[in-house]
Every structure is written in structure tokens, then in C-alpha cells.
Image (tube, rainbow, N blue to C red):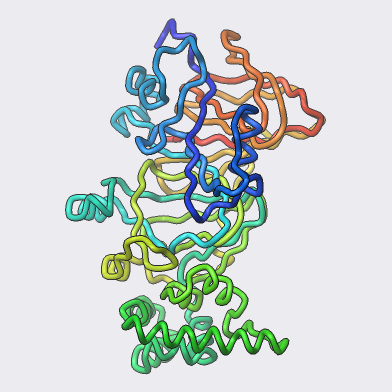
Length: 424
């Protein structure tokens, strides 16, 4: 690695225009893209769903430094694996272990879960067309704007409440499974089995039965809402919203099983293996293991794998409040906040520099990292002083292991940065 001056360089990142994304400049992704590259053209009627910052083959970032012969980040890492840091390089076989993203969600993403490593490898071998990676995919979402998602099974008391108040939901689960769940409220050891039975019954319900029940439910809730009645007992507002996005989809009933989690900007949720979830609305920073593996269950036109999903899920109920992932303040740096999940693949740092501070150093760590500027403008330079560049909202930088960046802030309102890395 010695003698290489290009330890720090800007990236041009891949935008994914999935149909669920926010449209035009309503999308935080589109705003960052156009702010980072004034020549970028944003089409006002197209969705801008995801910005991929990393070296995944489906979205390898392009290096924006004409002194570097490699065209993409993936090629650079392959030629200079030492830039990952020795521990990361050895643990992850010379690959960048994480994929960093910005998401702008306009309509619900499918109800899904990500397999653990063993299941991922097995699914990839059996069904490579549906499961393109053999890696696991834990992920974390950090809200940029108020953000809504479904995450994990609700406490049994809440599910029981919906079984009583929503006869159409009860009809899909069936009397036997519903009674079993309601009879074991105080027996935590028996809860996962009973919950699995209820969820599996609903997911395996015959299509014409659940479409009929869904139509009855939507008609009833619409009439109640029109008459000014309170529909919270049947989670009416969310039901009607999801049904308008995915009419006739079994996923509309999942709102009675899964927690609704609302994140304020800066709050996070972590989704480990086998945790059922769906993003509903808002903009977030997301970081995950470098994988594209998803098992889907509803709210999607894509391949649904009900049996795999029902078998793999974690049926441990917990309240919505427990799904908000704790952030810790760095004891040595008052502007640095750590989101450090219980997996080794990635950690995210939020750096919030106030307006009163004009000089900040992005400290060296023993891992390659990717830095995204969300707000503010500055001049950034590697501490060796070899490559100085102007950075602003939308700029994305690759920082090699053990490299630090001195940031001279030129904008009046301070800066907001997010940094993804791997702290082994």
C-alpha cells in the first residue's frame, strides 16, 4: 500500500429506479444525486428509490478521479485489497463486507425477511434464480425523514385484540389456531409455536377466501371511516393505504401480526436474520451485509416463497418500542454517534458538526469506509494533503483503512455526514 497517494477518492454511485421509490425531486435519493452532480438530469415522473454506495456487482460505484486507472470501486479493491484493512481483508476474503444505501420509499416494500448464512447458502444452491447470493443480509435503517416500517411480531395481547375486533382476520387464522394463541398469553415458551401456526394458517389461506375477506374488511372500514368512526381497532388507516397500493394482497393482513414502527430522523432499526419486516414510507440511510437475498411474503408482485418464509421466521413477539435500535455517543468526539449492530459486517457512524465548528477530522480506523455528505459544504483533504476536493450534499467518498480526512467547513449551517465501515 505504501507509495499510493489515492487513499481517498470520490465516487459516482448507482441509482436504482424501483417502482416503489419516491418520484422526481420528492426523493431524497434524487436530491442527493443532483446536489452531488449538477449535470445529473432528474426526470420528474420517474421513481428514484435507492442509491447504492459500494462494490456489489449489481451496482458497483464508479471512481471519479482521473488519476486512478481502475474504473470502479470493485476493481480498485480487487487490485488493492490492503485498502480494506488487514482484519477486514482476511475475514471477508478481500471483499468490502457491506453495502451502504439511501432509500426513498413512496409505497410499501414487500413483507420480507432475510435468511441467515446457512439458509442463504442452501436457498442459493437450490433456487439461484430467486436467491442470487449465498450471503446473509442483516440490515439497518436510519431515518433521514420521518420513516415508517413494519418490524417483528407484535406482543400476543395486541394480536389477540385484532383477532377479537377484526372478524375477517380471525376467519383467515381459523378458530383453532386463534384460540390456541389466546389461551397461552401467559406462557412465553408456547407463544412462538402458537404464533407460527396462526401466521402460517393465514399465509396459506386459499386465494379466493382471503380476497373475499379482504374485500369485506376494506368495505367495512371504508364505510366506518366515511362515517367519521374511529377505525383504530382494525388498524384502518394503514389497511386502506396498503390495500390501495396492493389490492387483493395477503400482505394487507400482516398489519395485524407485525409492529408498526415510526422513526424520527436519526432513529434506527436493526433487522437481523429471520425478522419479518416491510418499509412503508420515508427516506433513510441503510447499511447491510453485501447481499441481495430476500424471502418475500406479500405486498409485492415478485416471487413469494410462503413455505420458506413461514419456516424461517423468528416468532418472538416484542413491543414496537423495542425495535428502535440504540445509538451511542462517542466518548472522545461529541459530534460522533455510533450505530453498532450485533453483526460484524458493518457499523454506521453519524457525524453531526454544528455551525460553530469549521474544522473537523474524520478519524482513521482499521477499515475501509464510505462517507456520504447529507448536508453542508466543505473542502476535504487526506491528511497527507495529497488530494484536496470540494465536498457537499450528495458527495460520496471512499476512505481507505488508516486514512483520515481533514474537513474544512465552508457552509454556514454545519454538516451532517454518515460513514459506513467494518469494526472487527
